[in-house]
Image (cartoon, rainbow, N blue to C red):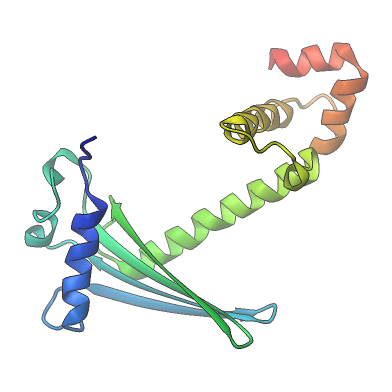
Length: 179
């Protein structure tokens, strides 16, 4: 299978410049440190928009909105334990590491809020569905149900109560499904 943009291309590009401490490379850099709930989270972002760098990515010109390559290193410290993850991205955002970190952080905030709603309304964390594609299929169904319930405004109550009402009241269920 051939990919337009290779993880290896981006990884190798950043790895080479890391070996030289990013010296002389035209990266934008930003760092955030968040403390709370007994942990410290440190995020570092390197972003580059230099055309010579972009041209090192396989088939880069096919990504019409490609403006930058990004590496984010996240470190989470809880007590003496430390976990570090490195992620690579292509981005349509301008070469602004601080803005990219904020966008990435905001994305996870949205994901976490969605997960919270799904867990409260559908008890998602306790799902025993594990076999083959079933977890992904049920996630899609839960998202569809959540969207239908959010768009039904005749009942002024929470998502969980609306879901339960669908189980008790066929007329209401049909109203929700009619969207």
